[in-house]
Length: 139
Length: 139
DNA sequence: CACCAATTTATAATGACTATAAAATAAAAT
DNA sequence: ATTTTATTTTATAGTCATTATAAATTGGTG
Ligand SMILES: [Mn+2]
Ligand SMILES: [Mn+2]
Ligand SMILES: [Zn+2]
Ligand SMILES: [Zn+2]
Image (tube, rainbow over all chains, first blue to last red; front, side, top):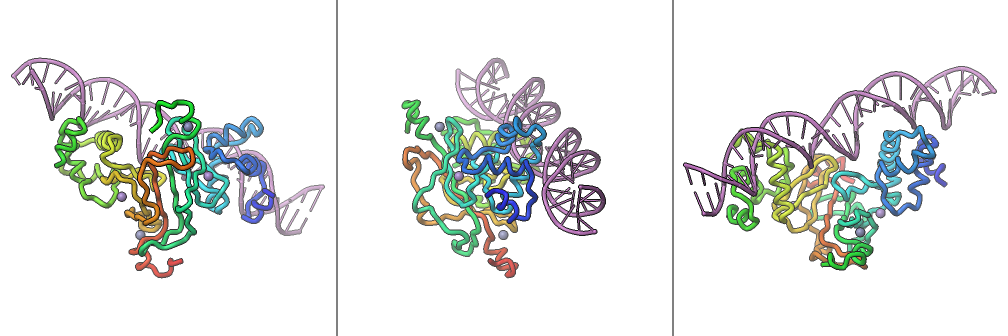
C-alpha cells in the first residue's frame, strides 16, 4: 500500500504525495513533472508545481522512482526504480520501456577500475505506431 | 585536414569554426560549450558564446561530433561521433569514455518493432583516481 | 573589387528547475 | 481533544544553460 511506502521512507502522509504516487502507480507513460501537475491540478486545485518537484525529488533520492533524462529539455519520471532501457520516438516524442537482453546488468559492478553504481540506456528512433502510420519514413 | 571536413559539410571556413574543431581534435575531456568558449576566448577575443553553440549544433546535426547529456544541467561535446559508453564520476565530475564489450551495437538496428537509429549509454559512479584518493568511499 | 548569402556577435528571451520564506498541516506529545 | 513543532506546501522570485533575434561582419564566388 502506498501509505506504507511513505511511512517506510519516514515521510509524512500528505494528500499531495498520495495523489502523485497514485498517478504514477503502474503508469508506463513516463510523465514529466508538468504533466503530473496538469493532470492532478483539477482534483487538487491548491497543488503547486514546486510540490510536484519536491515530492519527485524526495522519492527519487529515496530510490522509490527514477528520473528519465532521455530528452534534453525536460525530465520524466518512472515509478519503476530498477534500471532498464528507454526509447524516445523522434516523431511522436513518446517514451517506452525497451529492455534488450544482453544489456541487463546488476549494479553496482566494475568496469576496469571504475566503480559503476548506476547506468542509463537510452534509445532514439521511430516507434512501431509511427512506422505504421508513415511508411515513407522507414529506414 | 579540418578545412576539408568543413568543406565536405558545405560549411564556410571561419576562424571560429577552425578554432573549435582544433580544440576538439583528439580531445577526450568531453568539454561543455562554456569550457570551449573560455578556453578559446583569450586567443579569439571577439568570440561569442552563441557562436560556440551554433557551431557545435551544426556539427552535431551533421554527424561530425556528438552531444553528451550525462549531466542534468549541462551538455558536453565529443569529437567522436560514434556511439560509445560514457562514465560520470560523482565525486570529481569528470567524464570518461567507457566502452563495455557486449554493449557494442551497430546502428541502426531493430528491437521488437522499434527502429533504433541511435543510443546513449551513461554510467555513474566513482572513477579510479577518486577511488585511490579516498579509500573510505569504496563500496 | 563587389556582391550576397552565410556567419558572427551582442543582447534579450525562454523555460525548466531551484531557492526562499511565509502559511498550513501531519503527527507526536500532553 | 488540544497543543506543539517539525515538516510540508504554496506562491513567488531567482537561476542558468540554451535559444531567438536582428544588426554587423565576412568568406567565397565571379
Ligand atoms: Mn521505464
Ligand atoms: Mn566519448
Ligand atoms: Zn512515435
Ligand atoms: Zn573522480
